[in-house]
Length: 239
Figure 1 (cartoon, rainbow, N blue to C red):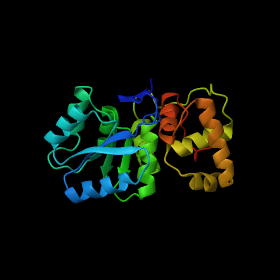
Figure 2: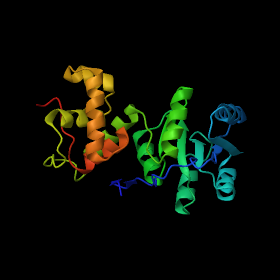
Figure 3: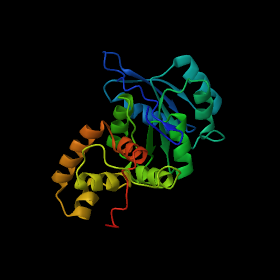
Figure 4: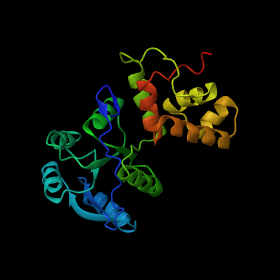
């Protein structure tokens, strides 16, 4: 099981909605306009079925328990709720695969959300395409966070006990691949990695494909957590 200081991968890696039946989605948010707009958006996406809405904390808890959705889209700005709703659901093991929609999330909240079992964090300023990509990723059992959030997470954890030293490379990664692991884990985009090491964008993509295969990870967040677990992150500017 993937675990870093209480952050666990609760995904089963079993894809949802691939056996002909659409994935069942519950939308939880305080504002009716927000919920209606999100519902209209998702109705245009194949393989998704919005089965219900909730406008307050108590209703969210009840509908999750009654409807048992495959996916919960949860607006973190719900008044007097925040992460407390997710805590309540996690405590009773009824939290479905969950994406948090937020106008901004601090590192502390991010760590709590991931510990509770949230798989995706999406900014309300994100594009429709980014949201749908996040939904597909989470439904397939993977984490989905933006590069900035991954960088914040890694920086928060990198100073924690047990992450202070670089261990011997046991994964047959080249020196350049180890450098790219560190850069990606600290939140750099492919473009920034290419500029950092004066290599092409395509070369970065090839390296990442090889790295993912060697380490058995599926996303940039999983790469970051794996790298932390195995001491693969180092100061790429210090050498």
